[in-house]
Length: 460
Image (cartoon, rainbow, N blue to C red; front, side, top):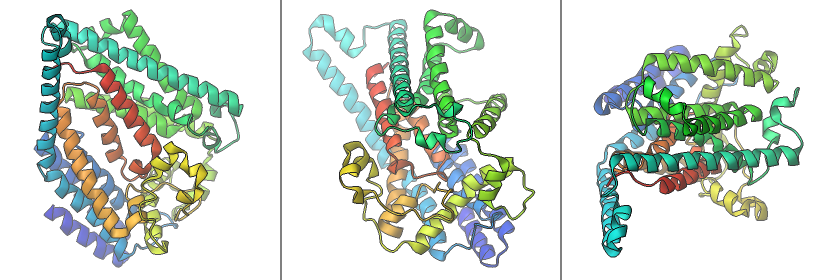
């Protein structure tokens, strides 16, 4: 932490002297240092604390480069909020209280199942406790339920997609010349079910990893009827983001699947990264073209200082860097705090109160440019309570991540890895948006928890 604090101070001083390039180049290695430190301590490539620091602090370093004319000097209060977020999150993540809570929760589950077993008839006890089930039988039961969960989510998602297409009268992929076709492809309440398909590839990984290792056994499992069904569900779940022309949903689906694999197997090779990039980059570029976003259109929005910067550098840079400038706009322009209404947006959305009382959600968005609306994970916490909101949010997020890490180690439910992978994606994309005031985030988590309860536990 001391190394990061020193680098942060140097970066702030350089930014004040308008030495932007060095300011960013000092902060980026500090973010990698924090990630490496957490990885070395835990041996976990997707350590939640490390991912958040790498993403948020590293994204801040990238933003400090100031390669766009839209970017301006940040206020000292903005710098303070970014610093407090990382420091408080890391301190909260080091407290061992959530580990003890995770242990109690695991023990409570065991005791409750043993109590249920004692109260049942002798012939029913084995089924309730799982003690009399052989490992092979347990594996078949869990795999079967995972497959049912995959099929259920896929069919619901497909039905919702077809409903939206029928009611709205178009499919974004085939709507040429409409740059924001995906934004219009939305029926309130229904679209949550449409995009729930992003969970299916992660469940496929859980299904494949449930028994045995090795490419040989993997191929044998995929050749079965169940394997064909699992691949079919996954193909449909990946086709829906493509038809919706949603780059984000595609990245989320694939990224969560990769993180689920790392969480279960605790291994990941460089060749997997290369294969994934070879598949994802063409898909991302293809969806950009299908969204009718030309190079001229994007360059006109991003306003890079160097007009010759290639679009494959400009686009990811601005999707990271400008978010921090949007936060600075909020800090400098916000007249009064929302007092919790922004973070409670999922409640207003799920209950329908946003339609009955529009004042609950009608807050202006303070950004550098109307088209660039992505923000950091801290945006709504500051919008609600200022610096105190940032501290409180970072504290609760750090404690939650520590608790989830403990539950992943102690609970015998394989779908817990999908929940962990989902939170890991949010930490890895902490620079992108306010994940926990987004209704879709809670819908995904709710659907995953339901799947976890349906699949059940393998062991005590």
